[in-house]
Structure formats: C-alpha cells, structure tokens
Image (cartoon, rainbow, N blue to C red):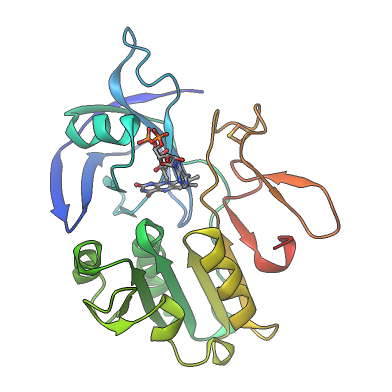
Length: 244
Ligand SMILES: Cc1cc2nc3c(=O)[nH]c(=O)nc-3n(C[C@H](O)[C@H](O)[C@H](O)COP(=O)(O)OP(=O)(O)OC[C@H]3O[C@@H](n4cnc5c(N)ncnc54)[C@H](O)[C@@H]3O)c2cc1C
Ligand code: FES
C-alpha cells in the first residue's frame, strides 16, 4: 500500500479531539472513506508497527483533515506529529440518492468524524438534512460547534439532551435516508429506530490491520451467515446487510 508523506499544516483542539489538516491533491475523497495513517518515521521506528484507520473528516479539493481521539500509542504519536504518512482514501463510503429527500446524520463520539464531509456533500447536492451528535459528556461535545444547528446529547446530561444520540431525535422513520457512524451498539439501535422505510447506512469502526483486504482482521458478520471485510466492502454498509 502506498503511503504519502504530508506535513500537518494546521492543528486545532476541539474539546477532547484534535483536528489535523494536510494538503491533499492526489485524488478525490468520497464521504465515509478512510485513510490509514501513522506518524512519519516508519520503517526506522516500526512504532507502531501498523498504521491506523481514520475517517476523512473534511476535504475541500486542496486540504484534507482528520479528527483524532487519542486512545493508545498510534493516535498519541499522530496527535503530536508534524509530518504524517497517509494512504489515499480507501473503502466504500456513503451512497447518496438525492431522490430520497430529507436525511438524518447521526454520530456517536469520534463517529462524528465522517459526518462533516458527508454534510458538505449533501449541501452541494441540495439534500436537506438534520444532524444528531451523541457524546459521553461535555468535553468531547465541544466538537459540535463544527456542526451548526446539530442536536446534541450527552450520557451525563452535561450538554444538550440527557441520554443517547437517539434521545435527541424524534422519529427517524420520517427521514428518507439515515446515515450513522459510531460504536456498534449505537449503530444497532439506529438500525432498529430507522425501521424499514428509510435507506439506512452505517459506518462501522472495526479494528483494522492492513486496510487493504489481506488480513481479514476487520470482518463484520452479515445476515444469512458469513463475514465481510470492512476495509474493502465497507466501512459503510447498508444496515440490512449486517447481522446485528
Ligand atoms: C473505518 C474507521 C474509521 C475510524 N475513524 C476514526 C477517526 O476519524 N478518528 C479517530 O480518532 N479514530 C477513528 N477510528 C478508530 C481508530 O482507528 C482507533 O482509535 C485507532 O486505531 C487506535 O489506535 P491506537 O494505537 O491509538 O490505540 P491502540 O493502542 O491500538 O488501542 C488503544 C485502545 O483503543 C481500543 N481501540 C483501538 N481501535 C479501536 C476501534 N476501532 N474501535 C474501538 N476501540 C478501539 C483498543 O481496544 C484499546 O483499548 C476509526 C476506525 C475505523 C475502523
Ligand atoms: S484490515 Fe486487513 S482485511 Fe481489512
């Protein structure tokens, strides 16, 4: 897999997340696609051994950005790096059909990351949409300022509605399309709430090894039996494809 060495041109703290911007002119980005990224230094350091997957947060044809939540070694190094190595955008993103009418976008925690570029694309296509964001507490919820008009929920009630992201919505069944990203329990709840009337697409956050389809580390169970790779066939899936 080809990695591009890019400078971090801008770094911004958004609550407990960090936004990294870098110049990207090597091809288009579809909403929901991800990149494999690591702090520059490989292979001299082999630290960490594997690059990590991140949704493309935004892209304006010149500058791409990633929204990072520091969890372990890989994200801690990326959070500080001035030079990073990224792949071109990978995987299958959200499929948009403007004929479906109003869309609901739901993000849980760092799962808000792909919703910025998705909202930008929906705006460009003239698709009206509402954004609902759920967080543990008010610190990560500070990223909501990047999503003007979004409804916010926090589990401890310190910002917005007290409860899960679904507590901030009315009925998802009134939307023509539902797009969501977050932890699997949240995605399963969104799938249930969306019902069968709306086209529901879910972006899963399975751990990844290679990002190129060769390790099977990122598989998700599919309805009817078997597994499918989230780095190649996903990370965005139609809800009915998934077994949970
Ligand atoms: C398609 C996709 C898109 C993603 N987009 C983003 C994004 O935009 N921004 C972002 O910050 N993160 C995103 N992630 C998650 C990110 O890849 C992980 O947080 C990262 O790999 C952790 O690496 P680390 O070395 O810091 O932590 P590690 O040392 O590898 O792990 C630290 C802790 O985090 C847990 N962890 C690691 N990966 C995951 C995961 N995928 N899901 C749940 N828990 C995990 C581990 O179990 C461990 O407890 C995405 C993941 C996928 C698959
Ligand atoms: S991460 Fe290796 S097959 Fe998907």
